[in-house]
Length: 232
Image (cartoon, rainbow, N blue to C red):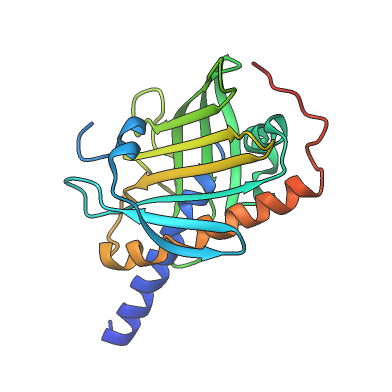
């Protein structure tokens, strides 16, 4: 393959893998950041536009960077959570979300979610199974969702036509403040499980989280989930 064609393919591959973070955040040890490890990352601001900030940070023993994005708005806590839990309509704010569904539901706060990322040719589509848990602080009312990719197992074998994500951590935080506004934070650390130059994927993980939060904010401000109630 000619060098310029190879470079173009690698660039497309890295960009497509980067958007997986936006998809899996809707559901959603070793060399990967556990949910609590996000607190220990030295975050650096990468983008600050229209009230949305995106940060990246290095993770010990990993060539792939973590990403943290956030904004604050006059949004109801229950509405924001309802949007993230509405897997059937994840494509409204994550444009490459082909499918997301509850595979197993253990309780209103504990489930397994299956999701598929429909990526442009020649990049192969990705899918994942994730264990998703929700927790609310009784005092602050802040809600945290932690999602850990399960990978491949006898219960969750690979599907034809998809590359399975096997190492990824995701987290949502919904934090009410004293002024009545809601701070929304999303965190992700992903190994795309493919031959993608880390320096390129690290550079491209900024735009998709930004766009996803921008779409989410628009939906929430428009009142799409105003009637929602917390399920726990």
